[in-house]
Image (cartoon, rainbow, N blue to C red):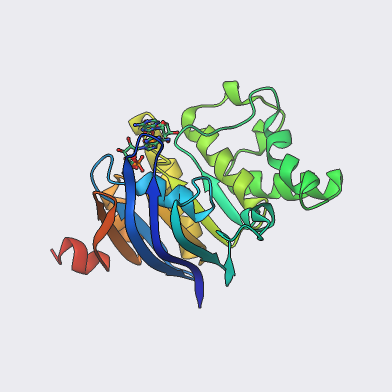
Amino acid sequence: EVLIKVDNVHKVYANNLHALNGVSETISKGEVVVIVGPSGSGKSTFLRSLNLLEVPTSGHIYFEGVDITSKATDINKHRQKMGMVFQHFNLFPHKTILENITLAPIKLLKKSKEEAEKEAMDLLKRVGLEQKANAYPSHLSGGQKQRIAIVRALAMKPDVMLFDEPTSALDPEMVGEVLELMKALAHEGMTMAVVTHEMGFAKEVATRVIFMDAGQIKEQGTPEEFFGNP
Ligand code: ADP
Ligand code: ADP
C-alpha cells in the first residue's frame, strides 16, 4: 500500500542552486527507507519536501493519495500525520517536557489536557523518561532530548516518521539510545524515512536504502543489495 509518492520533483533554491533534480520515489506502508549520500546531495531537501517544509519548484508529492503540492490542499491537516525529527531537537525551551509533548495533541487533535497527559506519560514510561515530565529541555542530555522529540512526534499518532540526521548532533555515547528507540519503532511496523550517516542502522533496520548524489536518486536497493553480503 503506497503511502507517499514523489513524482518528478525539482527544487531550485533562491540562489539558483538545483538541490533536487527530478526525483521520483514511492514509499509504502511499513517500509523503513534510509537515505544516504554525500553532503549537499539533496537528502535533507528531499526529506523536508515530503511534508512540504520545502515546497518543490515543480513536480508533485502525494500523501495517502492526496496531492499535497496542490494549492487546494490544506497541508496542515496532512502534516499532522507525518512526525518529523530534526538534528537539533527543536523542543520549546520554556515549556516542560510534558507541555512539549501535549501541546499539539491538545491544540490540533482537540484532546483534553487529561487525556493528552495520560498518553504522554504512557509514552514517557515507554522510553524510561517519565521522571523528566516536569523538567525543562535544558536539564536533559542530548540523547534524552532527542528521545523526547521522537515521543512528541509519536503523540500525534503519525502514519509516517521522518528523521533528518537524528543522531548527528549527539555525543557519541548517546547515539545508541536514540537508534535503539528508532529500531523499536521500525520493528513495530512504523513507516520511516531516515537521513543518516549511521550505516549500521541502515544495514540492520532498512527495508530499502536510497543513495542520492547531485540532487538525484542514483541507486537504491535492499541493504544486502546495497552493502553486499559479508
Ligand atoms: P544534504 O542533506 O544531502 O546535505 P541538502 O538537501 O541539505 O543536502 O542541500 C542540498 C543543496 O541545497 C546544498 O548545496 C545546500 O547548500 C543547498 N541548500 C539547502 N538548503 C538551502 C536553502 N535554504 N537555500 C539555498 N540553498 C540551500
Ligand atoms: P542540515 O545538515 O541539518 O541540513 P545545513 O547546515 O545543511 O544543515 O543547513 C542548515 C540550514 O541552512 C537549513 O535550513 C538549510 O536549508 C539552510 N541552507 C543550507 N545550505 C544553504 C545555502 N547554500 N544557502 C542558504 N541556506 C542554506
